[in-house]
Image (cartoon, rainbow, N blue to C red):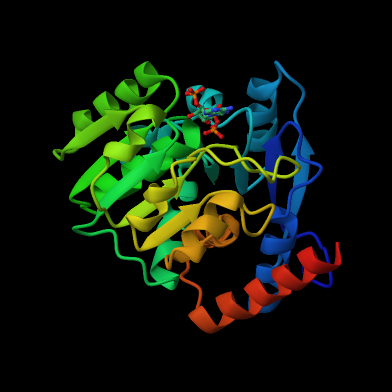
Length: 289
Ligand code: ATR
């Protein structure tokens, strides 16, 4: 946050329910302080059934940018004047940018994951990837993978029909092989490159849970990405690491989705040195919380 809030301060924020535990204000207010931009980012708790009023109110109040979180990432799409093709393909929007006519919707969750993978030198292009789960988070992962030209996607899910739906949706926009399997077929998987864990299984407090029990699975890939960041190392990541894989949790994805939103709102690209500095501040904040 800037030292001084004055008449020219640009207001940004987060709409969701709940929003009380969000780290986004720390990300955005640290970035604006570091870059000397006169803006402030605040959380807005939006009651159920009042999303339309919140969006209209945001426009009337001249809120220049909004992030959108659970449970509104899909519903918010009804209230926008434009949605980027990438967000449209994912079917969810997490970032709104103000224009005189209304808000434009973006999806920086997937972009943030892409930035996190780059940072960790995990290459999607020509990789064979496995995605565990077929919910909203899996959708963002799958669209990113397809856009970045992976060689193939295999989706593992408890409910096969949901995985089939996700596969059909990707195939509407991209031409690549997509397989769908249940957890009972995991032992039939050949070697592949990257495993993405997108379910909530293993999240604190259920840290002893793990979606894939087959031990041989963890020997079949070189990189594992778990979208969970609490705990820092899920049982899934621990097993992958023990078997020699590079591991990445969801914390950088969270950070970089914020970074991308900030860049979109302020029409800029932030220098990597500043990004690394603010990331360290965020880690420090999280550690002391
Ligand atoms: P999100 O938007 O966070 O991805 P979601 O849309 O509710 O959340 O999706 C949750 C994912 O976790 C789904 O793939 C779900 O599997 P189903 O499609 O079969 O429901 C998966 N998941 C959640 N709890 C699970 C459990 N106990 N066992 C297996 N899969 C589970």
